Image (cartoon, rainbow, N blue to C red; front, top):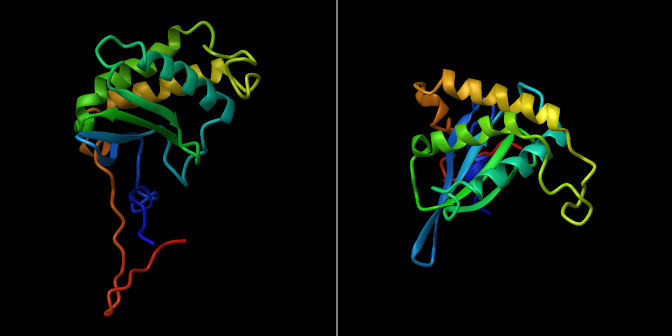
Amino acid sequence: MDLIPSFSVDHNAIIPGIFTSRVDQVGDSLITTYDIRLTRPNREPAVDVAAMHSLEHIIATYLRNDPEWKNEVIYWGPMGCLTGFYLILKGNRPPREIFDLVLRAFRSVKDTQSVPGTTPKNCGNYLMHNLGMAKWYAAIFADYLEAHSDNPAVFEYPKSERLITDDGQQFYDS
């Protein structure tokens, strides 16, 4: 099997930022999956699961209500490793072009009074939320983005180099 693109990224070198994970052709349209990385994988603790869940609800609601972007948003959700989120948008823009959207979304968390969609009818784990911690993580990430907006590494994935044998086989981390 082919190694999927997100596993070809050097997770020991990645820093928080906004990265293009993949671009796919779907019919006549392009869609882009962005990696919105909040913490340094394998070096910093994962985001608290209840805070991550709250950020998922708050930012998904923000993105789907943003007048400029709401019709471009396909998906917003957490990574299984709890170090960031995936944002899927229609089209193919470089990460710098969605910087303001992502920054506004994370900045909006500070004004949130309650997490949307947290009733048993609306959420599969409605008790697992932590608004206070979500606000803390959102502020840390937004401050980081603003402080590092001129650093190209915040927008470009570090790639893993794979050893290739003489007969063309690749060695993979496991």
